[in-house]
Each structure stands twice: as structure tokens, then as C-alpha cells.
Length: 237
Image 1 (tube, rainbow, N blue to C red):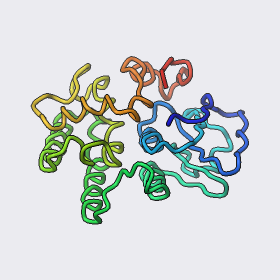
Image 2: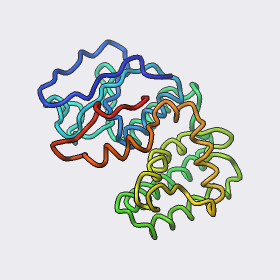
Image 3: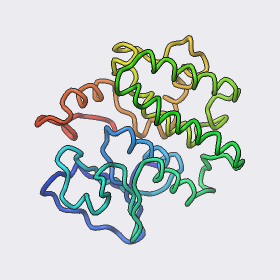
Image 4: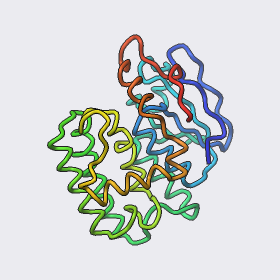
């Protein structure tokens, strides 16, 4: 389910939109891979919510009351506020467990998936942002091997689940980055993982958050400068 409403990116000097009773609100930024994680979970589970986009360059003064770290995502509903992508995403899954379940009911499998997530945040994400192709290829080999052992099309099974959606925001950005060379995606030599990437592009939740490579490139070119662009970059979502 697409959000019921979405704001432009609010910046310093902009007012905080009034919170509606009972409405689930996510504070996001449309190019942030970590906020994308939580938006994917919300959309995959078809949970009604509103999106308040925040400029992460010139932040609204009130945003510190939503997250003292002043990062997205943050989730708010009535008197409840949470932040950090894994915390927010897991909370949504555990609060709505019967609405398109995204996690295994087996505690051991959930623990194994958490190990993969730790690996992703400690190894994959740094290698990606440092554009370290040697380390990133080691990560691809590790994840390809894990998916191959599972013997399934997705890490969750026959459809994407929580782990798939936590991984995806990095992989959708590979082609525009220089980590494997401009324009290059996951090599076909990583058969299981490259097949997973291809299938993920067809997922409804992924389609609801995806941007063209050109939009990612344009954003990266200007980010954290006085010419930082948010709403000025035309995107379908």
C-alpha cells in the first residue's frame, strides 16, 4: 500500500505537520537507503501510514524531538516514537505479525537472519560507501553462498521478506555507484544473488519506492552541499 499522504522535504523553518490520532507516521527522506528499509516493510505489509519527508541537510528544528540523532527513519504514532531502520522495521513486523508476515516463525531461522543483517551493516554497507570493490566482492560471495544454501528464490523463501527488504536498498544503488564500476550491477558469476536482484525489481513493494539510476546519481552529485536537491529531482515515488 502506498502512503496515504506524503509531504515535500521539510527544512529549517518549516512547521511540524499536526499528528493525527492513531495514524502511523514515518519521517523519511526519499533517497535514504535506511529509511527505504522501513518504507518497504510498511508497503509490503499494506499498512496505512503517512510519510513526512525531512531535509537531512537543513533539518527542521523540531526534528530533534523525534530523533535525538536527527536521522531518518523515525516512526511516530500517538505517544510512541522509535528510530533506527532495523528497530522501526522490526517493530512494524512484530506489531502487525499476521498482515503479510515477513519473518520466519522459527526462532533459529530468525536468529540466522539477524546474523546476516549484522554482516550487512558491518561489512556490506561500509564496503559499498567506501567503494571498495575487493571487499564488496567478498560480501557478494558471502551472500550468494548463503542464498544458494537456502535453495530459495528469496532470502525469506518464495517471496521477499524482512531480510530481503533490509538488503535491497544497498543493491538497488549498486549500478549507479562506482563500487563495481559505473553502470555495473551484481555480476552474473554470483548466480543466486544476481537472480535475486532481478526478481526483486518485480516486487510490488520495491516498485513503490524505487527511483531511476539517474535520480540517485543526481542526488549523490549535490548531497551535503548548498545545492543539495530533494524534491527538485523528479521521481515516480
